[in-house]
Image 1 (cartoon, one colour):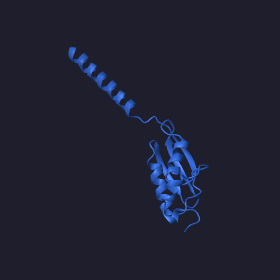
Image 2 (cartoon, one colour; image 1 turned 90 degrees about the vertical axis):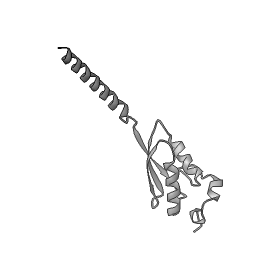
Image 3 (cartoon, helix red, strand yellow; image 1 turned 30 degrees about the horizontal axis):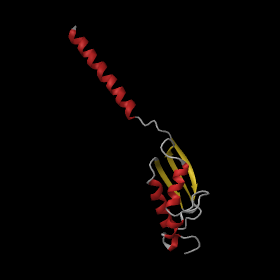
Image 4 (cartoon, helix red, strand yellow; image 1 turned 120 degrees about the horizontal axis):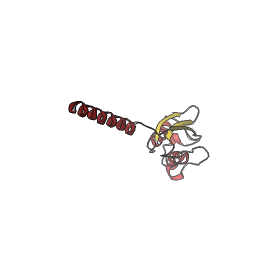
Length: 119
């Protein structure tokens, strides 16, 4: 009888522990998607620079930069980062993002092929 109670108690401990483990390891953070207009993106080098900048933002989960349509689709965790911070990462890399103008100093450091009107 004592061994059955002991086995039952051990089973309960294992089940409770596993439930706790699953609860702690589940990803409950919802991902949101936004589209960023990239009006000053010119070439593949621009695409790579912007993609790298966006992927470096904490909370950004996925980035798809579309050179042809001059936009980026960004999946992010809303409680970790805002759209404004995502735009700022693009701006700081030298490019316009939505209605925000590129950082002038970063823009000047871009290769000539990445500057608007210069090919």
